[in-house]
Image 1 (cartoon, one colour):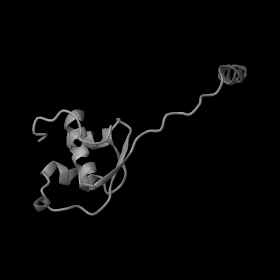
Image 2: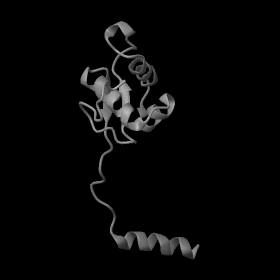
Image 3: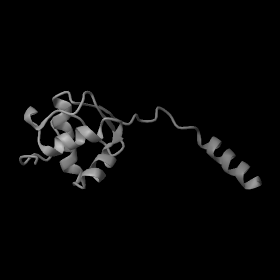
Length: 103
């Protein structure tokens, strides 16, 4: 399935990364494996990488390689999770906890 590859050609594909197909499902004649076509069918609406792996019942590493193939060919778009730019100060968390305790 992955032809010995252990990492995707493109993309990171975190568990919560979202993938979505950029076009309708191609035929197998387009040089894609059945798993690629299945991913394309699933990704007609945005799905997380974890959801794709769950639907395919394949290990995450294999799914990442397959998604990398599709991303490389322009069949999908991937949105990686954005790191939080800042977290509230600790005093805010303490104030919320104290407020909840007082209820």
